[in-house]
Structures are given as C-alpha cells and as structure tokens.
Image (cartoon, rainbow, N blue to C red; front, side):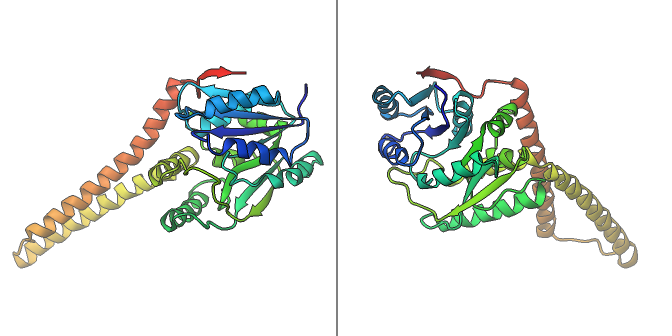
Length: 305
C-alpha cells in the first residue's frame, strides 16, 4: 500500500503522551497515511504501547532502537524507513500542532514548496535563561556560517520525498538537522505558531544538552572558530612583543624594571586561558573528525514491524 503521508515521531519515555498524540493527529491526516514511531531507548512502557497500537491499527509502524542514540539518529531512522510520498517530523508531546498538517500538505502537494517548516514566534513556558541563550545561538550561527537558521525553527516540518531523499544522502555522524535542512536548499515555506506546553512529561533537553548540541551545530557548519583561535594567537604574540619592548626601554631609560607579582600572575593566567581556549577549539574539530572516521552506524534497530 502506497502512503500519501508518513508521520515520523521520535519517542523517548513518552508513555503518558503517545496515545493522545496518536488520537489527536488522526483527526487531521489523510486515511492513506502511516505513523512511524521510533522508540529511542525508552525506559518506560513506550515500546509496549507502540506494539499494542500497531495491532489495533495496521498504519502504525514502530522502530525500537537498541539504546538511546539521540533524537537526530531517531529522526534519521524514521526518514530511512518511511514509505510516504510526503513526510512530516513531529514530537509526541503535541507541542507541534497537528492541525497545521492539512495546510502544510496542500502546499507541498501543489508544488508551492518542497518543504513546509515551522517556527515558534514566542517561547512562553520556557525558562528565561534557556530562551535568552537560544536567541544568542541563532544570531551567532547566522553570523559565522553560510546557512540561515531561522530563530525559533522547529524540527516539525512536512517535506516532499525528493527533499527527504536529499537529507538521507548526507551520511555525517555529527548530525545537526537544523543546519542540514537549510543547507540542502530547495524551496521552503514557513509557518509561524505560538509555543504550546507539553501535554505530559518533561522535556528531555536540559540546558547542558542544548549547550553541547549548539556546539555540534557550530562545529558542523562553520570553521570560523578556527580562524578566531589563529587570530587570538597572533594578537597574543604581538602583545607579548610590545610588552618586551616596553620592559627593555623602561629599564634602559629609567633603570626601573617592571615589578609586581600580582600583575605577572594575571598575565600568565590570561595567556594560559587563551591557550586552553584555542586548544579546546582545535580539540572539538579533531573530536568530530575522529567520530566521522570511525564511521559507526547512526543507529542500531532492536525490533521493528
């Protein structure tokens, strides 16, 4: 059976929301659709619920990963297994409003766009600190990379088969989909909506996880941090040359060597900090290269129907 639409849903510990998501989304999708749920190493009863759901509705497919590989890997697993002419990625917590799907599908079917993406126009309900740094991240990414990552962009987007196949061609291990989506090009139309609260459970994204995820994005789509490291080294070298000249001239003219234990320690700490920063930047790129060279699979499937 050929499906018009595949709904790809990464899940991790979503036992309290997955059934409500399924029921609500069903109201807005064509009959010739399929659900592709990816259980990303859940420790609750999510997998059992998905199996039961698939027995009640043969349009429901499930993919159970052998462990938690992360949302990026789960989305990739869903895209690689989905059979629809059009595909939509959604979260199971109903923060992505399913009532937008008919409009998104119509636009894509009419050929007006290869992808209909969504962005939040507000961050109500999010911690203030997280919202502040999220906005900073989007601004930084637009400045240092060649891709335009829209502020508030969500993974919730409906795409054509051609668009999805282009994503699958990208085989890199350090995946950052918010950058991959604009990088592949194609015509994209944006929908805006107000932020919605989760129907149940808590977000799996802590501030620390979001921070390291943002680092992945910067390293994956920009080499400018390496330029910053090089420029910092040049500036520190010039500053040290000027300092040496100042000390020598002062000694010759006034016979007064520059003294001060505290100032010396501060300079040493400052220079050491710059060295560690630049080494860390280099280390990030080296670590990502190491991961790519190992070429481990993006995910391992434990069970699927």
